[in-house]
Length: 303
Image 1 (tube, rainbow, N blue to C red):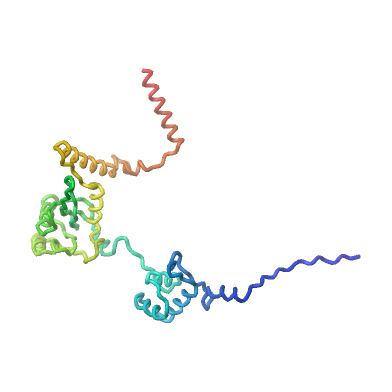
Image 2 (image 1 turned 90 degrees about the horizontal axis):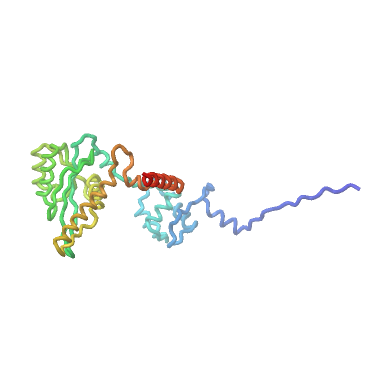
């Protein structure tokens, strides 16, 4: 008697209409997925339906530029109240808005980077506080830095940032290094004063003002003050007795020396001492080094 062939079970995936409709909401009319930005809209609970409404509204612009402030007002009138940051993220995620990349240093500053020493001199002032016991004394430190070499060429310590302080620094730089081609500075009352402008004109130096509200435009001096304040730390001097005063001054000077020495390469080495100290050493390497030191000490004791 012939045996009947075995039947193979057929599995059919049945998707309920409600599930299919919910899944379909995550795509546009061309079956491209609508994207919800990661970590966005947690407070406002951004959903796929909300993203769809924003995308449809944005497509109505038909090539016109989307201005976020006006676009947000239109969405609010349509019942969608989200922050500009969240709306921008949704538009960028769905290729409807161009992402804005923040430059570390603006083109204005990059265009000023000269390769000629003493070509462009950056000058700026910053407040430095000195503590004598529990009393704070703020001072303005005016500093000039060469843009090409980052050489700190001159400084002045005054009660406030004045035209006299700026001229004092420029004059000290001129005596030490000569007349620069241009001077880069902010639009403050000191740098832009008539006295400073007359001084620059007298020596044929070109004033190069930095736009207001643009501290990175004078990035050379901003970086110099950042390094200086890290090296100095908090300047606190103990005035209890002459000996404690002397110890406080010595501690400050030694601290500055150690900070700067650790950031300068020794002889022809490529790495600074700080970078060299940060290199990880394996236990095997330490064991070999320890064995060598033990052998060295043992040999010295036998002599």
